[in-house]
Amino acid sequence: MAVIHRTTVKPTKLELLTSWLPSRPWYSGAGEPQLAKAGGFRLDDPQGEVGIEFMVVTDTSGTHPVSYLVPLTYRGAPLDGAEHALVGTMEHGVLGRRWAYDGCHDPVLVAQLLALIEGRAEAQDQNTSDTPDREVARSYTGDHATPADFTTSAADDHEGTELPAPHGTTLRVHRVLRPTPDHAPVPPPGATGHVAGSWQLPDGTRARGLFAVLHPGAGA
Image (cartoon, rainbow, N blue to C red; front, side):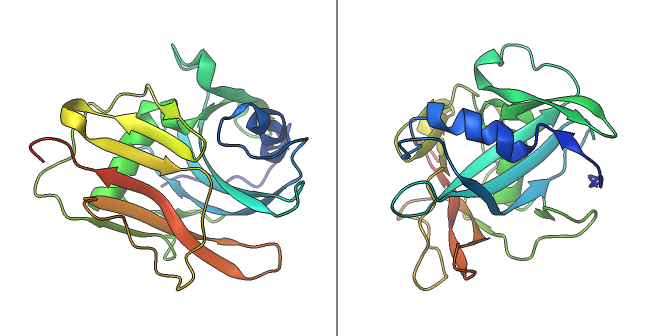
């Protein structure tokens, strides 16, 4: 299980995201973001090398607050070929220099997200070591394993990120989060799997929505 260290990180994750978010196609703000951490969860890297976090941040700089899902990986060395996905570097009080990446371009995060959807991995609390996050829900209705060779050539649009795999299968990560009124997110028709989670709104209430959806391809 991943260990949560109680230490300093400079710059902070929110400081890194304040600089990085405006460069994303799915960011809807017009100026410098005013970010607050609103929720999220972690996944464990089976090799124990890569930190995996799904962070929800809420931007209150515009007329209406907007919440974004930002999957992040933290590495002790640069990830080859992923310079375009680098969010920034941080100095961790225990682990030293860490390279933070947009996790949709990191094969370790993508593999563990698929494992979560299929029930082979368990979401972990964002802030406490060795503690499952019971607010994260997932489903999988496929009758065989998802293709292991998902590419990390993720394509962003104004709502999220699409990751393709052979035979048309796609994994869509929702970046702009939409609360569901009944707190029971339902994947779209035809989807074979999903992940849903919770986050806190600026008024202190809890919201739930879809985080990721798996769509089948030909022959699925």
